[in-house]
Image 1 (cartoon, rainbow, N blue to C red):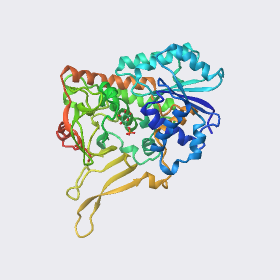
Image 2: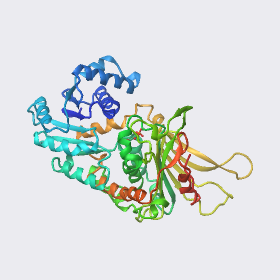
Image 3: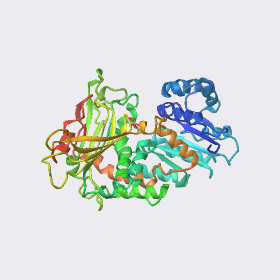
Image 4: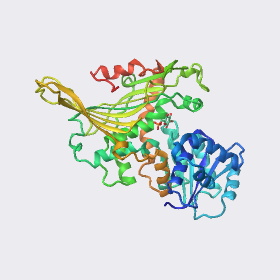
Length: 480
Ligand code: BG6
């Protein structure tokens, strides 16, 4: 069991808190992973009594947690930990009130989870300091995106760093908490099989796709300022790229793992000038059908401008300038309102050097994170009968089945427990976040300089056709 702590969630009535954090804490409670003396305090501006907030939280948890995992008795014991405090995080005075509410126990670990817009991060950190709530036992958790550019990320990191030393800052990227993402590290570094061929000489290219069927839901105001580049590529997709491409760390600890990841981010070849048009595609969904249902165009979504120039789709051809990866394209692709929800990594190997049987496809390894967790290796086999006719066959590992259908932890469960235990291996270090912005910024700038407006694509499709061209001109194809 973990240490006792106070988990304070800023943005306590927001989507993230209600849809992800509270259900994750409920699961940890149910699994006996929270200390009996751990309290959860949700913070937001609106006035709610404790019982009204508990009712709100219960409604959301019931909707998010599988029916078999939810029971009234467990909920009642979880709700006993859960409280609400109305405050305005932009007002310094409110932190004095918060301090009184928390009491004097400075030995107690306090975890401030900032599930708010990043423009509040700096204020919250400095108000915590002034109210003497950021003592050596306090930790802070920041949700991505950290800022909207390198400069704003540096300002946030500096402001947070003035209050909390780096070991107490947890920059969350929930993709790192996903079981399959961690399995990617196990696959690479706990098996001798792949390492010798995990390099330019044997790999033709890599694809990393995170395709969603969801639109922007009720996050239009946030998304208008972010777009797919800041919302997904800058963090989730680049983190996946790091895990595919990094060297084996000397130890599985926070510094060793993050040192290797940052080297990859720093080795990303800058995409600037005309390369921006050549190596990136932006798209925006128009009206279409998802699962048989009509959905509106992005620019008709709530809180979105009618003439919005925000991208809901991005495809990029990235390259890593180092010995292992020189010349191997890493194609990244993400989009909302696409035909299917899938997150996957494809490692496309090179063909055999000599085609003995007249044809055959090159091997590929597919690591699927969503919807089901699976790792499959496509090999060539001989089809039954006379003659050497080749046919692709798959070695297919379904991770849920392999682990006997044990409940797979949600990413936030794992990451929240890591914060409580003070383990930052699966969190982004300051230099990682800044290196990622350093690569992303010139692309965004190039789009604006060259008036590269998003290409329309109908909801329910595979994205704009220009994204296919990105690969087809090199005789490659996106994995469908
Ligand atoms: C979030 C993005 O970080 O990740 C969302 O802000 C996106 O726009 C979500 O929908 C995707 O996460 P997952 O776990 O559903 O793939």
